[in-house]
Structure formats: C-alpha cells, structure tokens
Amino acid sequence: MKIKLLSAFILLTTLGMNAQTITESDLKEIRSSFTLNPATKAIQNALTTDENIKSLALNRDLQGKIDHFFKYRVTVKGITDQKSSGRCWMFTSMNVMRPLAMDKYGLDKFDFSHNYLYFWDLFEKSNLFLENIITTGQTSMDDRAVSEFFKSPVGDGGVWNLYFNAAEKYGIVPQDVMPETAQSNNTNQFIKILNERLRKGGYDLREMTANGKKATELRQQKKVILADVYRILALCLGEPPTTFTWRYKDKKGDIKVLKNYTPKQFYNDIKPADYSLENYIMIMNDPTREYYKVYEIQNDRNTVEGINWIYLNLPNEDIKKATLASIKANEPMYASCDVGKQSNRETGVLDPKMYDYESLFGVKLEMEKKARILTRQSGSTHAMTLIGCDVDENEKPVKWEFENSWGESAGNKGYLTFTDSWFNEYLFRVVIHRKYLDQKAISSLKQKPILLPVWDYMN
Image 1 (spheres, rainbow, N blue to C red):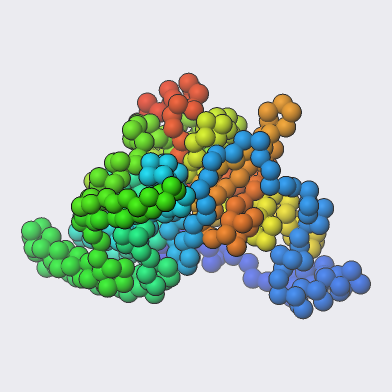
Image 2 (cartoon, rainbow, N blue to C red):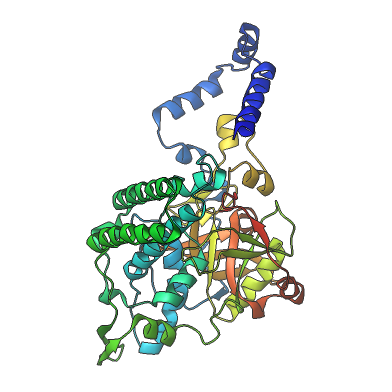
C-alpha cells in the first residue's frame, strides 16, 4: 500500500514539475486567433440564440438524399418501447425472438414481459456484486476492480449474454402475465435506492471480513441483503410468477389458453432448436485490437454461473458479409452501436456527415474509429435489431436498417436507416448464427479467449 501511495506521489510531483501554466503571452496569442469578422459574428449570434446546436450543424446536402427502402428486409412484427430505461439489450434480444412467438401462436400482435426478466436480471446482478465483494474482501478499496464494483453495483445496461444467462435460468413470459410498472418504465430512482442498499451491504461484508468473520457467516449475511433486494424489486416491479395461465386471441379470432405454464417451458417452446452459445456468436469490430481473435471481458455477466461477454473481433467487411447473409435468410440479429453519433432522430437517418460541426465551429474534429474508442469519444451505447440492407447493382451494401425500441414516434416510425459508411464508423457488435460466418472466422472461434479486465473500455 505504501509503495502504491509513493508511486502516486512521485507521478503527481513529476506532472507538477513539467506542467506549464498559461502565461500572459500565451493568452495574448490565443485571443488574437479569434477574429470576430462578419461571418464569425453571424455564427456567434446563431449559437448564442439557438440552443439546438445540431439544427445549426445539420448538413442540408444530405437531406432527402437517403430513403428508407431496402432490397433485403427481415419480416418484422412492430415496434416496442423501452421508455425511460436502459434495457435496450433486453428489448433487442427479445425482439429477435418475437416473430418466432407470433408465428407459433398465430398472433398479429405480441410482446414479451421485459419486466419479468428485468426483475431476475437485477436480482442476479445483486448476487454477483455481493459475491465479488466477498471475494475481494481483503483487497484495498483503492483497487481498481473493487472501485469498479462499488461505482455501479447494478444497473439497466447489458449485452446479449445477460439475456441468454437470465432467460436460460428463469425463462420468459408474455407481457400480459407480468406487465410493465411505473418503476420498470422509469428506472432511475429505484435503481439508486437499490444501489444504496447494495453499497451498504457490500461495505458491511468488508467490515465483517476485516473482523475475521468466516465465509459461512458472510454468505448468511449475503442472504439477508438479498432478501432486502428482493423486497425492493417486488415492491417496484411486482413479484414474478413461477407458473402462469395465459389467454390470448389468435389472428383467426379464436381464444386460446396456456394453463399452468412455467416461464422455462414458454422460453423453451419459442427459442430456436439450435439456440446455444455454440451456434450464436457475438462478433465485434474493435480496431484497437487484433482481428480474428476471441476476447472475454472479465465479470461482464449477471449470474455467477453465467457466461461473460465473449466476442470474436472481425473486420467490418467480414461482418457485413455475414449480416447480409442472415438478412437474406430472414433472420434478424441483435446489434449494438454508438447511436447518438451523427444521428438525425427526426428523419431516422444516420450518416457520418449528417452534422457538420467542423464548418459551424471552424475547428477540426475528425478522428478515426480506433482513436475515438481509445479516447472514450465513441463506444457502444445502444442495442437494436438489425433487419435490413439495401445494395447497389453489384450487391454491395449501400445502407442498413435497425428496428429500434423507442416507440413508433422515434425516427422513421420506429426504425432507423444508417448508411454503409456509418456502419464502418459506429456499429460495434452483432450476435449471429455461426453458419453465416466464413471458414476463417469459424476457425478463429477455437482459440482460448484473451481475458480483458472488468474496467475495459469496451465494457
């Protein structure tokens, strides 16, 4: 501990010795670079009057040039709405499954209960957090991993593997069986309360460890904490059923009933026969790391026994070939991207040149994808279902389409169109059946994953 503190002191001292203050001469030179000529004055007037910078930077040359028509498009079944929650990964995972359920039961409309699986996701994340605290009980609070655990014990965010872990363990149910609540639709406040209880519980467990308590005593206390977690979740989300009866009307108008069904039965009835970790692969475009390598992010899961986030890193061109093949076969895919970048939410069009901030401000902003990732300027922020691709006369992709989960009023009636160049810059990962990968990618899957830390920038 003393060595760590000494190293930190030396680093800060060195930085202080080498750092340079802004002098009067520096300031004079910098101020002189800003000339308030008529053009600059007009820009200043616009920026200080209109609070919407995006509207001022909108590239007019692009407007009306990108349509929403696609040569290849998966059969889709309507738009969902995650409301004010960060459950996009869960909605997307279920949106991939929704057409299967509708076909099986002959429905025109259908959705799963995201609230049901959300309950179990948060409950399992709470257990994982407490287990991590017990495991690191004798590690300094300054340790980077311990700090990361306490920074956000649980949250809405996630990736496809979290859906797989929770659904395999607890199953899924129709929306009617466990509808959304005020708190599942707007999760911010109750998550804060849940995390407050978990941080207190985590701290108490560390104090017990410091006082020499045995593992059996720590785990008994963990159950006490988890009982409180269950109470908070049940009060805010409702208590999840162990069995259910579901009445529904099919597209023919006939009333059908599923009696005394378990969530696991319902999940197993709907999922594809080959829905497994061996067949469904997360592929990623991360130019900061070597391609055709498999990576695993430590502790990036929700259940203790579940799988971490594991991905095969591939060049964009390989990902495009595979995803186009899946779309042509009418198979939608889980995908995630940096949705906020160069995205026109009114028209539902995403293109790297949608907003020209460089011209507006007269400064250089452009960075390559690798640099944006390493500097935290860009990263995956939102999951959506990849469903469409338009191509030119040579079958080369021109643009793609997402099915979003922000309701029908967002974008193009709930869908987003993104150009192929936007795909290159801001699409990060896709979950796809291995049959659409080429032989080189499939061979790469045999490698032992390279383990990345819990604080990895792709997390």
